[in-house]
Amino acid sequence: MTVLVTGGAGYIGSHMVWALLDAGEQVVVLDNLSTGNDWAVAAQAELVIGDIGDEALLDNLMGSKNIDSIIHFAGSIIVPESVSDPLKYYLNNTVKSRALIAAAVRNNVKNFIFSSTAAVYGDPETVPVDETARLAPMSPYGTSKLMTELMLADTAKAHDFRYTALRYFNVAGADPVGRTGSSTKDATLLIKVACEVVVGKRPHLSVFGTDYDTPDGTGVRDYIHVTDLVDAHCLALGYLRAGNDSLVVNCGYGHGFSVLDVIEAVKRVSKTEIEVQYAPRRPGDSPKVVAKADAVRAVLNWQPQYDDLDVIVAHGLNWERHLISRNRS
Image (cartoon, rainbow, N blue to C red; front, side, top):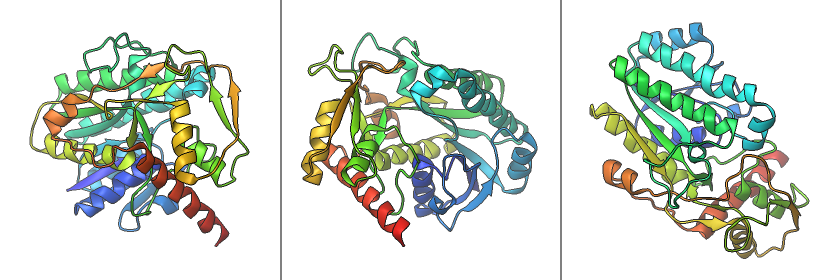
């Protein structure tokens, strides 16, 4: 059987492809390369350049490639951009996900893993936040992902179809052996941006908001290594293939670091000072979001291996240095 990975040329998707290949899976990647890179896709996988909203293409792929499972990463992910351009997010993250889900049902693909987000919680009333918390997104990005979760739940009730929605917290780091990492141009992820400052790709790091109700006034997030996150997807795939019920779980470590904590970690690991500029809060950002991640450990037997901020930073920094070497060659 074959796994279809949408957005498999992107940051998390390219790690997922390597993990699946390492496990002996057959993999087809569908990506329109709007933000991903064809060179980031492992050579052993089949890359199809196309859009997840193209229903004829989806039917052709699912009908001809013996696909039994879909892992869905494709979409738009920048919170402030979603506030200024909400319709882009409802198209890319909701409308096109609906097309993908519909194609799965038509073609009898029963297993679906969805890249959801902690943004569905908005500004949670209790931290750490668990999966039963009130869902109150603060941005169209979060709402667009929540709408897809709702579509999946309703589809699972109506059809022979099971899904796992993994609510990511802040993903960072890179493949420990250096095969792939975050290669998105103009990325907004904090650790990625800070590492770009270290290697000279950016002149400074902007800190958005210093007046939050947190210990040092900056936003607090739960940073999860991309390899641990991808491992949760592999476990979810086995869980669904075994015929288990649909599942929604958080993916985080259960503890948070502030923006200033992360900056100190980057300086510590790189042994480099970086210029920091302070700016107002961005629309849609929550003050503090940390996962309660008991469910993913209990149900999927997830055992993270890289729960160390300095390790996460070191792997991300190694990847930035690799990209510089790659671009020079």
